[in-house]
Image 1 (spheres, rainbow, N blue to C red):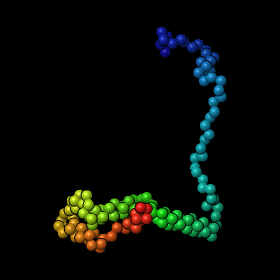
Image 2: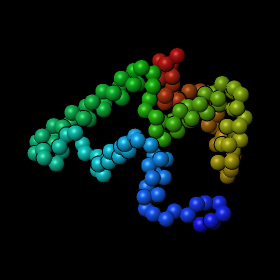
Image 3: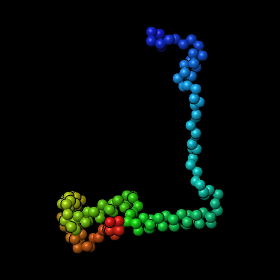
Image 4: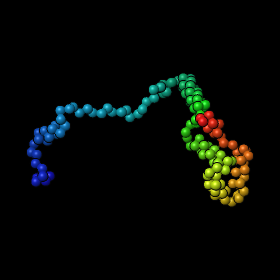
Length: 144
């Protein structure tokens, strides 16, 4: 401690007095502690095998119903596989229509199939003829 800058504190009361002055008269409320483990609302561990199977079947049917509802509304679940399918569909549509970006898709295919010269041309002809069809196009049409 630098005595030229700060006053020396001689007693514990001075420390507490300064602290009380800084904190004011408001009581300090301790934050509530969160439980370490988040417990499931349904006590799965307490279920019998029959109850557990019924519970899982109900949850699975709810999941399938929500996926069908999402698909019927014109959307799919956002995950890695649906993203790949959507990007593949976009590339197929670019190749089929010859739209802007089709050259970039062809250049990428040429790099991927560098040892098979005819593969990119075959893929483009399959896209144009409809032999390669987009998987998610029906969903994109519903959302439009």
